[in-house]
Image (cartoon, rainbow over all chains, first blue to last red; front, side, top):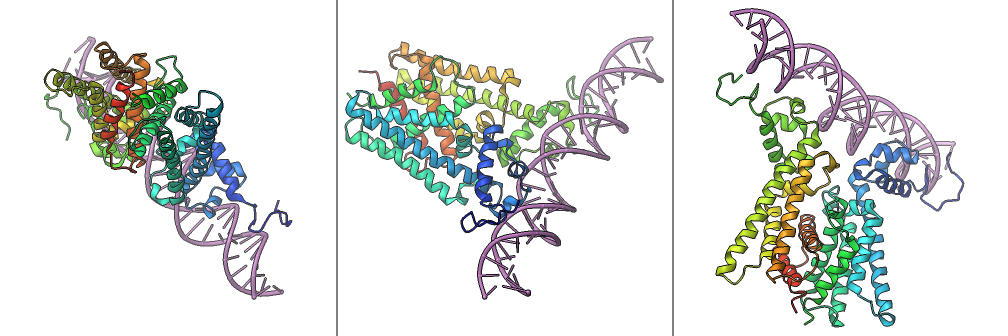
Length: 211
Length: 211
DNA sequence: GCGTCGATGTTGTCAGCGTCAACATAAACT
DNA sequence: AGTTTATGTTGACGCTGACAACATCGACGC
């Protein structure tokens, strides 16, 4: 049971990187039963460890959730970057290349594909963000990507004038609102998918000041 | 202690409309300490009643929250109607009369003024809406008001073409997204208030197909 | 009037939760 | 080898929502 073979790198004690194992187990648990289904006893049992072992690696339950949220923001950030890059690439070739729309699509696709991460990131389970500066920083960096994309599109004449921060906040609100309302089953009154709505919104916003 | 005087109308037993008292105490408790601070024991104590008395009037804690949410949706519905009516009135007199913007402003003002109600209505504390058809109905009626307002503005030529349901979903997403992001302290990167952003969005959306 | 009954409220109790303190173990360093 | 320190375990506490059994009181039939 005790892996005393010098296989793992320095810093592996009894279990060997229990912190990462707990993190992955937590993410899996949330994926299976939602944030409300996450239990310190449960995540401990999932790793084969006692219920309080976790306290040697995380200050408390909130800290564990904050780490999950941080991982979520990193993936989210990467997903947005990829969506933006994809739209930028297709620009030279195909006519589509609507960077804002593609970013919005990447947004809602991430949320749809990783609802548990999204829930931890933006749900109400994390009470005090002040406690987790790295989480704040990653969230802020993600938002900055949004702002810079808007500014870049403005510079290329593909988006109307206005404070890019404010425009980004509007775009973010649309995406986040659609994701959360959709998750709450509030957007099922029409055949239009959430992706359709994103494309529509993007057209309306970017076209607003075109003429 | 026992109010046996026939002062109250028929149907008041030991306490006399304990259900309403519990409802109000619950709303007050949530306002004071958030949804997470709501405790059956606490709300019972606030009314001067035992911790399980509530089970004679509500099936469980979720049912109590659902009733609070229903009350919230009724007030929300009324607030939106008032905002729309106000904009309609000022139309004939003043030049403003932007009904969509005024509706959005009423939306975010309600959320800002009644964060506890809004949280219960749209937060994650209500797991299964299926259990509460009256709540679903009131929420649906509120959304219908939104759709009809959009359609009405379209008919008057003050809003572009498109499926009014889809447009209403977009407007709703903007408002809801701004409210929740703002509540999560995510919209503090600019001086623009949430009301400024609503007016901006409204202009961009209604102007999108104007030309 | 009185007695039954059903509606309403209380107490006892349970399992599950997060968390802390005390203890156990094993790796690491001297 | 012996000490220290990092890591994991067990016991316990207070809190929560919920159920079962009991108590109380208004209403209604006789």
